[in-house]
Image (cartoon, rainbow, N blue to C red; front, top):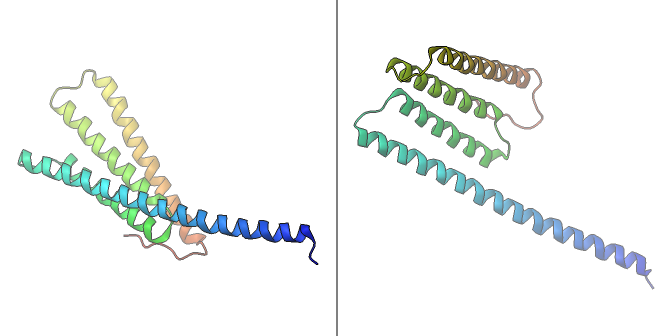
Length: 159
């Protein structure tokens, strides 16, 4: 005759195994659904921005940089979908592109005479360019670290 404690332990292990199996299945399902929703939102936003540019009849450099941001976000989703790892460098590239877009917008406003105070504008431009420099150094450090200390998993190509 088996001990009731052993029977309870086996039942508990079986329950934990089932919970882990179904829990992982639910997490994977949510993960896939969320990635498709994010990807669809990126495509929808990029299409809307493109149609807005087409309606204007021209695209500014800010508009083109916005399309590059959508491209990088789409690449991030694709890489994350395939590898389940977030490419941090891509987030840095998106941030650099967004800051560059902001910098160009600020310079355009100043050029058109819409800047209220040129001293504030100088500090604003300095802050943006300093942030871009800091992000570029961070990308360089990440590249160097991934080259010098590669991880055990297969690396994602730098496209």
